Length: 239
Image 1 (cartoon, helix red, strand yellow):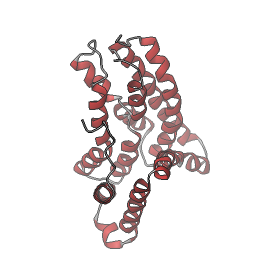
Image 2: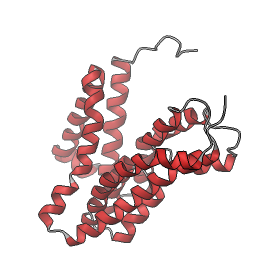
Image 3: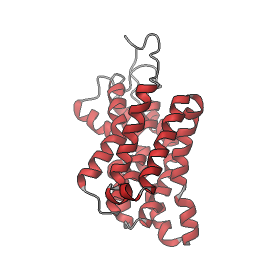
């Protein structure tokens, strides 16, 4: 089967992702500035990470003076899914992609980039993948820059209203699968309950950093639901 290796086609496929990232990263830029980061620091975070959930979790840890271990473990738990997506995507990469190219492409292998890449019929080549990841990186970074600048200019009420948009994005991501799968909804509910316990119980709130709270809630809720209601293995997927 012919390898898809058009840089122009990759750019075309990446533009919609870029436009979607603009609004989300705009909200992150406001969030970062309001947390005490400078415009340059906010932009560098987005340029060197390209992970919405990881950045949203990392900013409060850094702002509160959390430890590097706390930050690293939080990022490992939150972003571990990318390693699985990269393994899956590697099966679609054509012969034109070297080992160095694989490392560079994995840097921007976000949920949306992964979904677009694997949806192609046949393998994808080097030029296509670079074309695919450049617009999302540019959009994520530019949106952060605009949001960070707006956070310094817009009135506090407007900035606060725009800042919650990033939370709305995560709600929009969680709600559809939660409505479809009862186990997913229960997992989300358990994570919320645990988070509230860590927030409102003084002994826990005062002794456990926020970053570790995220880790603990994520691991416990996922482990409990994996044991209680594991997803069934579809036919043909276990081979």
